[in-house]
Length: 207
Picture (cartoon, rainbow, N blue to C red):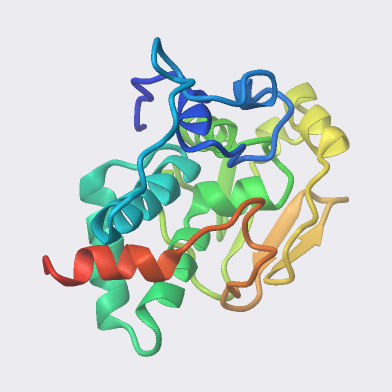
């Protein structure tokens, strides 16, 4: 599992946005950059800087993905039919850790990764402990029978404030979920403005 090496909410303050839309973000109390010079006016970004920030923002949002994993997602999106930017979002949203979070089983991507790595989740009745596992349309993921009465799972589901996206079919009675169609990218996908188009532009000159 990817290890976070920096404070989770420090990036929020650096870019001036609460990217997970959570009450825990330090940006809610200190709306300026971290460090000694955090209050200084920010310099205007170059075109390259805008694209770089868009890439970093999306990487951090999805539980601080490594550069190598993010590059693989771009290269795969490049081979798929259609818009590369939309393909990037679809591939990210079809990751198992993202689907577990979106379904309300975990309050964050990081929590979802912990559930998966500890064997809480089955995909098509097989235990999958790979957080980056790419689900396909028609795949069914559910809580392992050994953990279906877990207080952690019950608490997560009851406290969830997420609106489950339309590409996930939910049967909460049995804690069973199904990816019924390809995820759509629109303004409701993220709590803040994201620019997958800028991410695609960032990588386009490199690969």
